[in-house]
Length: 307
Length: 260
Image (tube, rainbow over all chains, first blue to last red; front, side, top):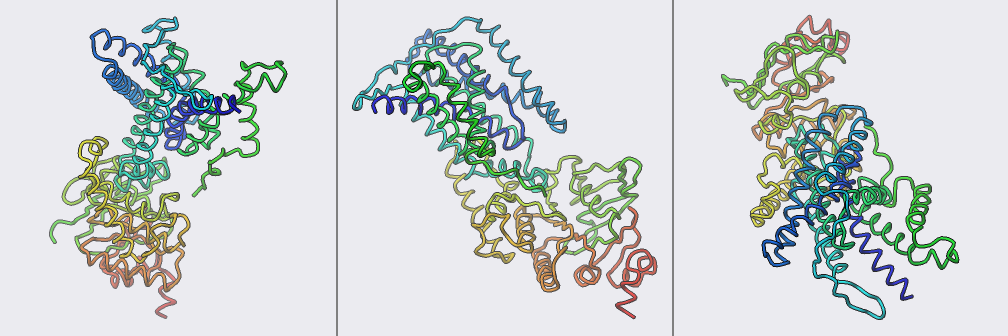
């Protein structure tokens, strides 16, 4: 039981990070029907930017909380800038092109970002500065670390803000209108280009936060760290029902839990034929099973009606 | 009355070899209802798409409230005060009825992404005003009590009303309607005509595409007839119904049957 609860805590932590990244995929997909495969690399960029900025600010003698806050702000600004640049220079010119063109562009951008990061930060694993969050509490045999608490709390806060923007603000309504009928939205005076850019901005900002979280959690940064994370977050978005915000969060949490439970129990279940290193296989096999029986995802709607 | 609210001069639009519009001119003055009729394929909807910036005309000018309309920027057309509805209704199907109308207010709101953080109280006030305004419009077009429903679950006639309410939320000076009574029965047509008259009484001019000649003749101050992308005739409903070219080209037997 203790193992189960412990893996639950670990899985939810991981799931929070997946959820934040999955939201970026689902926001852009919801409005453009584009899978922005470069999104995972924005998370990497967020992690490496906050890593470098934090070191810099600490060197300047700024106290830790201030350094973290400033580094996070800087990483968010950097990611948002790059996200906007991708949208403006790479995706917008292809908006009328066949769907495969932007998809291939996205894969190309992902590689470009990775190799660009390798040029700047090198190909070695970089140590993430210690955030002083290694303190932990024990509740009945279950260990919860401070960083896990911060990740959970931070995710909850961001989700609240995001849902408020999307569902309760004029900008969010304009975004949803653009997603549901761009022509009608335009003719009602909604600047649809701006709505689309906003989806990238929000996604990139969340990616930056996720980058800082994942860097601080594993205490390491590397130029390829966005690839697998992005792939898993994308899977989480599909699992939840791509285009659906609540679905992205649910998909992220479910994926995190599956992975953690797989890591905790695979060895026991298979008498050590498969170890915890098969956790991804376990998680993805379950995902495939879900998608076979429910192709539109857990909360996804069926294909939108044609007018 | 000297300067028209909407003034199209010599508008031409081609699709490949097909001339969809050839030198179409039309004026809409403040406080009037103008009808645009013509057979299928006469270019009525194409003309609407040019007016609202969805299509770029090869020739001709469109001026609205004395200024040229910004070409290829549909969202600015709405900001200038010209808004339209569609022949095939285009709601935001998964949003609530009330939210559909609230989107219409977007063009008149000031709050940006930063405003929400810098001046939260002003944003809250604005949001409250939008909500109140949307409720009032909902009641005004006769959809009271339907605000919480998902838009796509409304009946066909109510979806038309919602589309009009949403357009009115942009506070237009001219409302352009593409076949607002298509598929409606006589009673519903009558109710729609009453709604359009009430809109005109609010000081909003209307430009209406419709097939039903008797319906539009009873509604409009002036009518323009399009045929093969050209203006066939312009005038008061009585003049149009008497015009031999119009009778020959379009109204044909229908008028003869009614009057004979």
